[in-house]
Image (cartoon, rainbow, N blue to C red):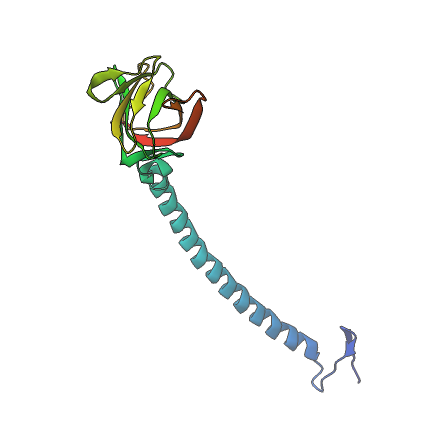
Length: 192
């Protein structure tokens, strides 16, 4: 008796009467089961590793490791002719909020500073070294002169422990000149 069966477009027969495709199919199933088990183990191993990495990243983020405020240093950058000397800037929060920066004239001549404004410091009063108040007549800063400038802001504008960042604008004119000039820059400082 000649037994044949069509399987995947091929006729397979054996002398014992069993179809060869059944034996092949059982082997294929066993091989596929082993491959599926290996794939599952692979995915589980990497899944646990990825889960552990996500947990570590979440813990570090909650501790503030990725916060730019914790890694940004105090800085003061101004356009010519003024500069901040040695990045000596500071801020004090509390009942009186003060921003402090050391201003240097590097323009080659004397300038009369008429106003200093910092965004985020709304009610600013400007004092130069030794408590000289910046008045409407201005304050003269000679060539290469360095002055400590204290800006007194409104109460509770600077929060202790935070970073303060603002744009600085200095209005001035050359001594003996009549054209008002402007120097601008940025200020980033930790509030103490």
